Length: 489
Image 1: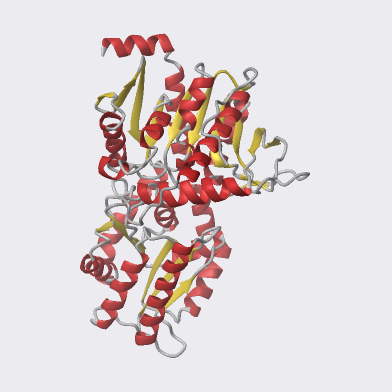
Image 2: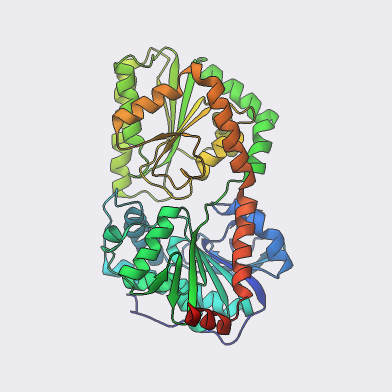
């Protein structure tokens, strides 16, 4: 069904000085015959942050338009050229839902959920990466900078370098990078390592991931390494941490607005004015820590360390775009836990767990951020955690407590949070009890103030600017200088 390999090719360089390549184009709608009306999707915040640089450098954005088999022509939106990549229904099933969602994501989250391996998925992954690389090679100007983003496109840097050695290529991985012992299970491990090292610079979400990637390059790829630099032929590839920032300006505008204040008042009445509101917002997968958190909360109620009469937990679970059988099983277990806790501890008309299984609009989500006294970001493993940062950004009065997994990619940035081992139910219980204690208000306010300063300073605009600065720094070093520096080292 899929050819084993094809080489991307181009009939000549394009004219775009800056090219961003992501799995999806962050604009909608992109249907045939309609013009994009807004930045949208998971990359919308940094698309807006990058727009001035893209516009100034005749920039282009490459990605799938979100519609199976619906090839659309290039568009222009806010002075940015958009080049849709066509994916068939088979590509979606084998590349996105197969190799990306069922192999790479579980493995990169420390194998919390068992990854599945299928040769058909790997062939699809290669073919789709080749398609993206060919598109970037065709539109990039001579000597252009190309930013490849996402675990879906880890082969693109090397494919693009083979087709266009004149380009400067940066790669950003938002997912954590697993240790050698886990990554060794990946059947196409050498291909992925070689693919990533086609870039001039690689940025990952945290220091642990950076160290893991360098060790992968040495132990599995056989490359020479010197601290955070990998030598590939005559090139030196810098590997470092760069955690994605939150769209702080947008969150603060919403948090200060009348719509959010009205929604907060309504939500508080609906929740019956509890003394303490605990909030969690998770993806529907095994790495979210939702089951462990609900177990801990239920035991705290049974132990009477929390009182059902004066606290509530709002548990939001964001559904996947296309739910798998494994996610159906997780959802069933989560809903059974919620039903068990409510059946045991709730009063008539006053559930102690409010369970929401849907996407929330920005006003509702920000109102929940502002209403919550405690935000529980206790995933078993994550890379960038924009939701935790958005909660911090929303706390305009510096109140509230963030309980954060020590295995989160943002744990180093938000060190003032209450850290917890999400695998340890007793540790979760301790952290939740301490966070809900009103006597901690003064200390919590000081901690939140420091976290807000960090989140505001290193927001999505800083992050996007830093990534561009890193790319431009690589562009200033010629291939000859790279080779000379490698020989000197």
